[in-house]
Length: 275
Image 1 (cartoon, rainbow, N blue to C red):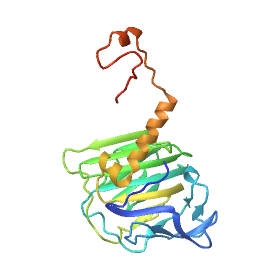
Image 2 (cartoon, one colour; image 1 turned 90 degrees about the vertical axis):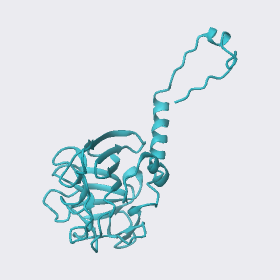
Image 3 (cartoon, rainbow, N blue to C red; image 1 turned 180 degrees about the vertical axis):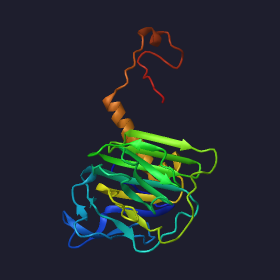
Image 4 (cartoon, one colour; image 1 turned 120 degrees about the vertical axis):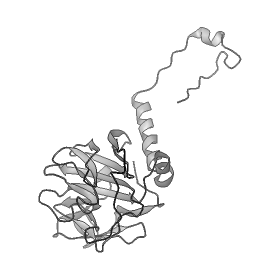
């Protein structure tokens, strides 16, 4: 999967190809700003020492990425949480090291609003909303992934894809009442943070790379993700292409099926398969 795109309902959008560096954005240069491409001016600024958030030229999927080594980026101002209390987050990431707990990729606040993070000390990724870390989906260190996290108040979904568009793991949870409601708030804890949670808790920093983060202030359905982000279309297309190439479908047709067929089939007629 090459890119995460789409502008409708964008809350914030970050791409490692659009950053400001301490010098010319050569490999291992310090990042001084990760630009928000949504038009909402929610740029991410480093809060940690030099050498902790750097630009790398050959990162996730062989493309420019941001490397976090006990580093944090955050918005300079408080950002209101999504007013409609819904959320869809796409993030391409790669864990270099999964030690620690609750390792934070992106979010607002820590436990009171929302965050995409590792589930405790496990090898699972979750979207924490309103004191719930379920559902969560399995990941591994040293691999490139794209996570798709969605929340609408009752439903939460987490899906993990590889760079070939294959669904690696997924999990969902539906509550009988609105128990996953994302509060609509603006305060000192609602800054968007990447790489480490708001209070920089010990051993909760992300150790790895991120390339793209797309945050939508709505719960994207499968069809909406197709049309809004072009994401799922690319993912499914690449997945189907991969499946067909790796596991071709064999169809065996008896000869007399052609000879004795009805008016729609005759000898030499092509066979059409519908899925």
